[in-house]
Image (cartoon, each protein chain N blue to C red):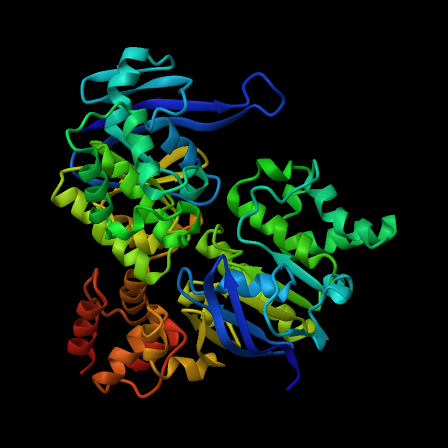
Length: 283
Length: 269
């Protein structure tokens, strides 16, 4: 699915003293079968934008097009029912959403809630767990007793169970250790490559963005500051600093070498490639 | 060196699941200790045991006091805690009132309270938040307010549970260096629980927890000497250590580097 955001704005606490513009004139193109990352610091509007694209919040002005369906400040019920099952949103504190006694019931609830029809529900539940690397022994476990990492994987499994076209993740790495982060990165890439999903990630984690992004929008103070391919964005120290963001470790090293020593080494995605470049230059 | 935490032969199970078996652990006073462990390694449980929220089979010593019911009031006067999730923790209508709250509980006078709020908000650079509603703040600012209200009582010991994860990396690094200064200059003890190996770069000492056991405990420099200390716990060393190890393998450098600028300078002399 292709999503076009056209000059959307969102105002919180309307008509009260606390009224505040959270998003202002956001325009962006989220391409089909790509990983689009919205990178921004605390309070930049990431979670609000994520819930708007997920149709959980209405916009105040502008419009959004999902393939051919256009929505504006009033969402038509018919359109909502068409779009809802196509969009999967994985919350930042996804474990706060769990309320069933078992993992199985939790996934089942999502399927029933969206009226998802499948010939073999039990198999569908098992398969979505398998996709995220959780074996069938998890079916009868209590979701609230899983570790943080497992809970994150479960919330992704719940989303995958109804096979949405778009997967939206809000700060997915926050609570994850190295091992679970690597698992998540592989899973997101698999979703794109094998299952042709459109993936939208909201994060302030530059290292994570660097590892997964096809295209990046920098969001700050409710506006899009800049958009572009990752090397263009991540080599721009001034831009990152102005927006309270940091350079990914790998890029930072190459950048340091270039600025401090006037030696140009490639910008790399993998520490072993960087290593080889250094070896070639220094030896 | 004086011990701030002493745990001997501790067993603890949570809802029939064994979390710790024969746990042995000590932490030094007036140091910045990072307790590093993957998800589900027992970090939060350990914090709860230290605070007396949970009870194991053997008595824990915190600042030479047994963590038992009778001592909890005394202990709580000396420690500040920043919990992982601040969503439900705020009680007051403004940040100023939120910060005054712990001091009012300790019967501080009005002037003292104003002065303390001024100092801590200056230290953490949150003066601009003082009139805001704490529950309306963004996740990062919430964590700073939680940290401020833990620091405002001038604690001897500060415990932080994944407490700075919501901050932007640039702000997090600034706060970590402020905390480090507090340890060095004001002699407080900081115990920082995290899953993020990068945080160990700010530590004096590191304890790696894995599967309810202490994998290794030492100064950070010693821990960095062997990458397996991290890998065995299903973790990765900090980026700069990973790079150092690879460069050592190719004989380009001899020692671990903790600073990228210095490494670049030495490589291209």
